[in-house]
Amino acid sequence: MIAVQEQALLNTVSVSLPYPTLCLVTDMEKVGKDRLLKVIDESVQGGVNLVQVREKRLTEETLKNLVLDVVDVVDGRAFLAVNSSLEASQLPGVDFLHLPESESGLVGSSSDLFGQSTHSLPMAQRAQQNGANYVFVGSVFPTQSHPGEGSIGTSILKEYNLSLDIPFVGIGGIDSSNAADVVKVGAHGVAVISAILATGEPKIAATQLMDAMLSEAGL
Image 1: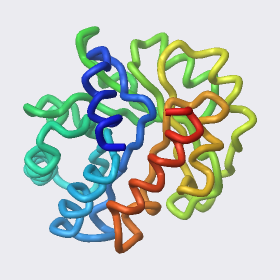
Image 2 (image 1 turned 135 degrees about the horizontal axis):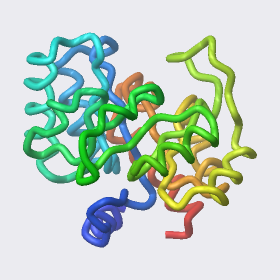
Image 3 (image 1 turned 120 degrees about the vertical axis):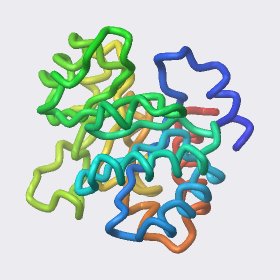
Image 4 (image 1 turned 90 degrees about the vertical axis):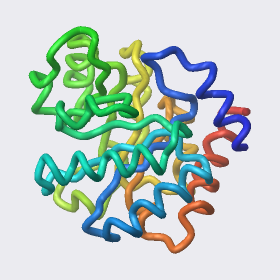
């Protein structure tokens, strides 16, 4: 399975994501910094091929230091995105700036590689028009991280598949039991938080998620 992941990275165009994408979104408040770095390392071993550093409560300097530590841990084995911080996203070893739905204006030039979180098809289409290289779509299922938000389910993802030319990644309430359902309707992959961070075996959790998607994709 790891060989498939590495080959996907080699075959990927510079502005694209590996297929299927398995993204770990960080939350240092859940596990602490030392544990987070260990989880990132083990989950990449298990199949995570995109890590998004999403730590909005950190100061810019602390965030940059964390990102540099994550770059060292990932060591080129996965793509790396940084949420919201243009400055931190330009550090060596970072591949993408990742923007919340409301912050597309942060992108400074057409040469910047960026992805964006979206919560509706029109916003995903707008992100594509603005030059996004990929979008996150969700919440697909009910999620603990956004308990007040409704979920969109998988059926509507078929419309994203028909309407977008860029990869879209499902996020929200996804685990190994439903990751294949997201890929089945055309998503490029999935992004998770608790499905990896909340487990004591991040490598196993990542492997189960990736295997579910690979099986659905026939890879």
